[in-house]
Amino acid sequence: MDIDLECDFMRVKSYITKRKQGDIEITKDLETPIKGKHVYVIDDIYDTGNTVNAVVNYLRVKKPKSINVVTLLKRKNSPHKIDAPIYDVMTIGDEWVVGYGMDDENGHCRNYKNIYKV
Image (cartoon, rainbow, N blue to C red; front, top):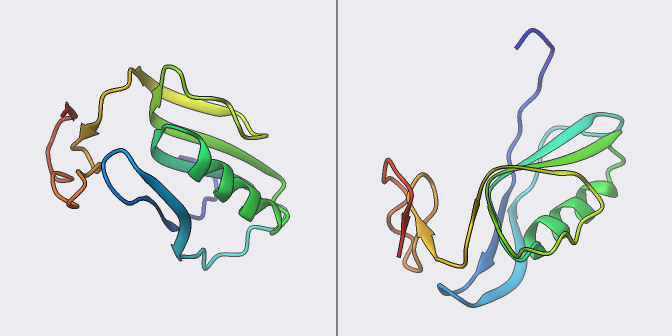
């Protein structure tokens, strides 16, 4: 890309087991100030919207110029709960998926080179 760009990471946990979502927990926060900047939240999957909604609301307090959400997968029936645009690559059904960075309930299968439904 031919633009100045900063990249930072957050670690956010929400799933306790395969089908049970727990409280949203930020285990690693941003180290880069985002005030007045365009922010893109990149996530593996947009499911219930709860995690992304919590992250967007958390980031809004830091006063970025804009927030956009980009996700690899979006569930077909996911509610649009956030006040930000969502851009997705692929829509999926209700199946649980692993691989390509997404894990199972034991934290395994992230290293698969493809996405598989369980």
